[in-house]
Length: 233
Image (tube, rainbow, N blue to C red; front, side, top):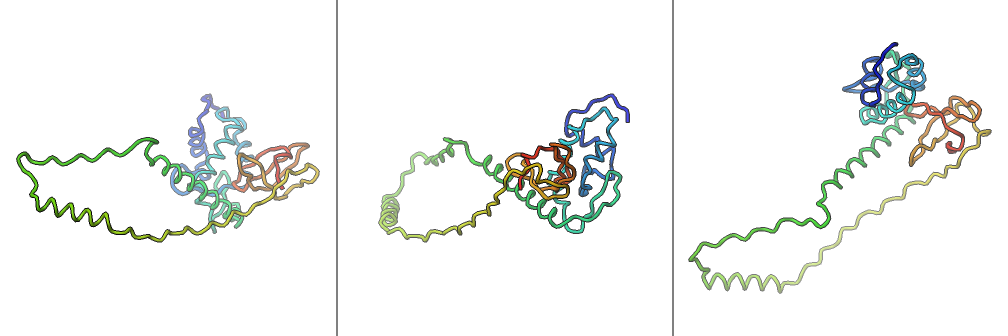
């Protein structure tokens, strides 16, 4: 492919992928599960396209596969597709569970952010309620004033009822998984591992080992190249 316009914005690159491979990438509506190892196929097909680089493709593919719309399509009975829309096998339960857990975590974080934004700013108080003006020349009758005062005194003298406090059920602590850095000589192709990306490890399978570089196919379909010290067992 020949082109002169260089794409740098991730959204523009995703739109270009949807236009170039409409049977694989979907801009609107339900997404389709992607073939495992699709990144390498994508890099090969666009090797001569000057619009995008491998780095840009990797970032765009990561955003596409981490979106809520894509995570929702990872479900029982769904079939993976390649760049031309050809079926490439049904999803495994392990991949479905990982996608659902990732989706829930992302939705919970978004909900917490919305709740945080809805809180009033620190030190900000509600506007005081304005007193209702009394018509000129009108004075309250003495009997009504005394009755209201008596009612208020009676309320003040009533003992307060102790309401039982609602006890929140204790949350069970999340299970701790002890992961340790792997050694290069212990790794092998097709081995299930965890890759240290960001704050939490991501599960995947080793697809190739080239000297000190280890190629791992993540459960989301993305392939990454890392050193052995970034792999956890």
